[in-house]
Image (cartoon, rainbow, N blue to C red; front, top):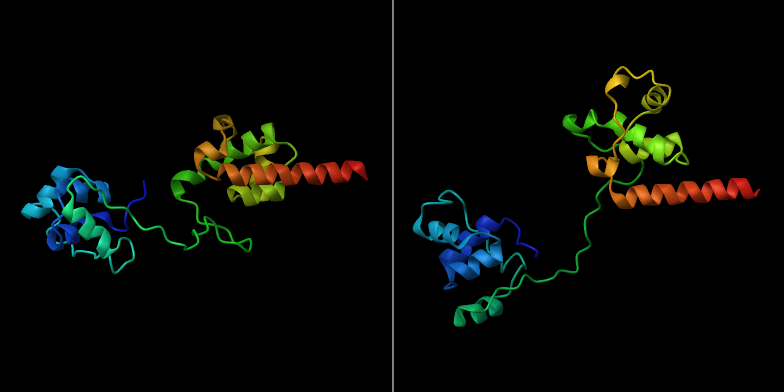
Length: 182
């Protein structure tokens, strides 16, 4: 279920400005009813400024009034026609990789080299955000940490998505088929 933006601030506003039950507010904001009750008592979220979900276009005033009349009714988040944000910037720019995941790159390279030999070095670089020299050192077993490299799937490591990997593999297979047919 989709949650509103800034759920705790939205819960603060709903508690202060509506007659909704704690369960209704908790269900809409993805919180526990006791946490909403603590917000109402002033024990939790004392410094949080309420965020009006009506002005943000997350719910209509009519929907709030409908739920105020019936305690069994649940607020429904409005669906917007806004496009989803891109996971990755286009144009070949490198994306930021957290330091904690950088040590997983050689493992992902080893897995890709073992399971998807059709991928070019350039595709591997774009897929997991590494350099050709790192790929060459893992392939030739000259990497400084060769003894500790264990081939692991880059999707499970969080270095790329399943869709990105499938797209790269399909592209590589098409390129290979065109090359062999000629």
